[in-house]
Every structure is written in C-alpha cells, then in structure tokens.
Length: 343
Image 1 (cartoon, rainbow, N blue to C red):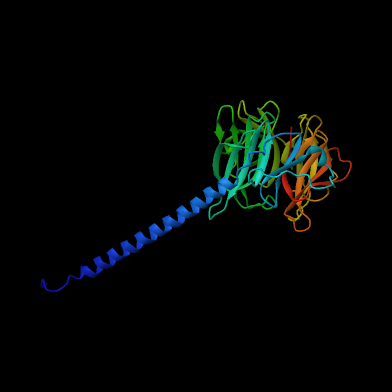
Image 2: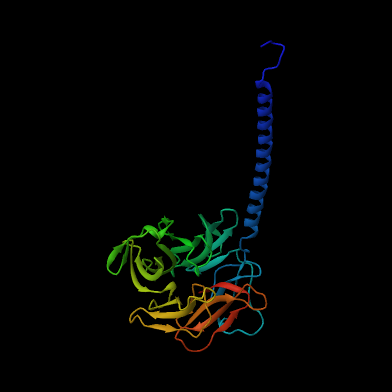
C-alpha cells in the first residue's frame, strides 16, 4: 500500500482516542457528582447529630419524632394516656430506629440507594457518636442491654416486611466492653427439639438481652416457622423454646417476654401482642387487639409500649397497654415510634 494513502487502521485509532476522551469526561463528571453527593451526605450527617443540650437522662420516654426524624423525649409520667399539652423535647440525632440503656444509645440510620445500607451508630450518654458500623439493608430492630454493654440490630437484607415470606434479615451483636462485633448471627449453633439444626433459610431478628449481658432471646425463622430462642453469649449457643414467637422483649425483672404472635394469615393484620411468663410458659393476650408489627418496649414491669400507624395522616403513634392483659390501649405519643424508657 502506498505511503500517500491513510492506513485503514487510522480511523479506528481516531475513534478509539475519541472514545477514551469521552469516557474520561464521563468519569470525571461522575466523580464530581459522586463527590457532590458524598459532600451532601456528610453535610446531612452533621445536621443529623444531637443538639449539645440533648442528652440521655431520665426518667423520660425517648422516641423517634416521625415529623422530623429526630429523637425526642418527654417526661415518663406523661406517657400512659397523656392528653395534655405536648411536653416533648426535641433536638436528638436523626435516626430511623432508636434504643438506649445504661448511658448508651443505638441509632440506626438508613442510607437509601440502589443497594440500600444502614449505619448502626453507637452513641454515648451525651448522644455523641462513639462508633459506626455499616451494613447492607434496611433498618428494622435495635436493642441495648440494661448495662449499655451489649447492642444488637437487625436489617432487612431483602424485602421489607415480616408479613411476607420473601424477606431475609441480618442481625448483628456488638460487645462494647471488648469491641467484638458479630456481623451476622446465622452461624450460631442452634438446637431445635433437642437436636442440632442446620438449614440454609435460617433468619434471626429481634434480639433482647438479659441483665447478665450473656443470656439473650431472639426470633429464628426456618421452613415457614418462627421460634423463640434462648441464647448465651458466653458459650455462643442458642436453643428453641417455643414456636410462633416474634420480636421478643424481655421485661425489666427478666421474668416475662412481650412478643407478637401470628394469629391470622391475613397479611394486613397477622399479629397480636402477647406476654409469655418464662417460668410457667403461659401466654397472656394483651388488650391491644390491632395487629402490631413492632418489637414492644417495656416502660416498667407493668406496661409495654409500641408503635402503630398514626392518625390524622401521621406515620405512626406510640401506644401503651398494661402487660397483664387488663386495661385498654392508650396513645402515649402522637407522631412517634421507637419508644424506650430511660432512667
């Protein structure tokens, strides 16, 4: 071929160079957008911290204010059936789920996206961040032991409702004294009906801790059934105690468990709140007859609190009901969720 004619490869090389330049421009543009979004998230994170004057103190009922997404509190005495002026104090951190005990707070904050993730943020008594753990999924449950040492949280890895079978959870446990983090409980040796149990569909959620910081209770699901399991941190083991128990919550005196029990196949209203006596294994249905999809919290040894869809367009309200099956449900907080008694 004559040197005066361009090589057939020349247009190809030119197109290749153009493609490289375009790709570089797009990459830089994408990086700028990513940096802008990252900067925005960092800014949102700064706005999401607690006010300097907002701390853990009590006695008080802490909760997530659904209008602002921030943690708020009100006098604990106002909680059962409060009907007077709104006494809430706002200014806490931004959380999607919150719990606190023993001068330790646990704030779960969702980070939306194509692959959503959750920040589990450990807070001190002044609600300042001490540690942050990132997990893939959507936040759903949070608990702190009475001493503040042991923390646990659950995220939906897939799906977003316990009312369907198309969900998967991941539950983590963090020991603040040792710093040891278990990112998933699924490998804990499990015993059902006296025999070691293995199955690929095992899911855990809703951990609640005993006062000794070693014993705990949780829900495990497998093959379409749910079980209450009792576990032990010291020897890392768990055994099933009873079927059809979800989202257990241990009473302050460590003798009873509030839980939601499946009573219907209606996906719109499958559960009802019960209390289980751990000594006699006797169940007591509570006076709340509506379906509660929450991990109830004990305000004291005689009262449990929980969230239900709110009235007047509110996302949710906090309700209370006696733990012995008597009385009637009452609104404690209009426009609230994640209730916890502190102090």
